[in-house]
Length: 265
Picture (spheres, rainbow, N blue to C red):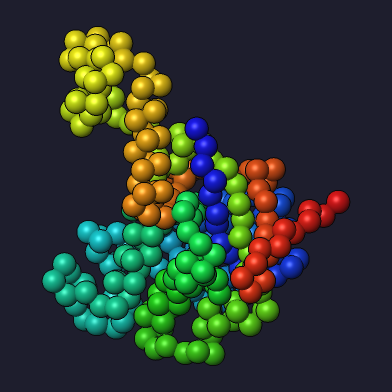
């Protein structure tokens, strides 16, 4: 089964074709490989090494700390190292970055059921990548001050970037939102429904209930939640998944319309 997904981003006319060449990459890959985002950050002397849990800002390296970890030194000049009861701004911002990259796995996120206006109003994505807000906070915290002169979000928007919607169809099996049903837990949750379909506990124990039965239950559950209760507006791919370029349709947002962008020959 497939569902149509939409991913909103901002880009220059030249850079939008990188999506047509590489597809939609997850955040970890975009930060570490040669992409418009990583090049922009390097211009601002920021380099994120996701694999090694490090971020370099103006030549100085900082650890991307998880919540339970301890700073090797205080980056705000305090005599006492941060603890669970006393945390400086640098520690808070670095652990928030860690949450985005490691706890949520920096997956490819999308809209499943949302209007264009709802997409444009979601966070900062119609103006700049959300991660720039997080990195702005980290940079300001370790520097001990906030300066609009080097504000990443403002500098990104100053490049006269346009807003685009990237559309693709994704298999449910590739999406965290529609993750495959856990066979062992499914019977408890849908026992009455399975019984009405002619299956009992013996069928469950012997694993003779066809997979398509569970697929149909998943489909009906998602269909009802989306089209009758207006739920499931957002979704994400499973960790490590990306969207291949050949699966993409690229649209430029022009006021309240979407205009498809032709691929370069």
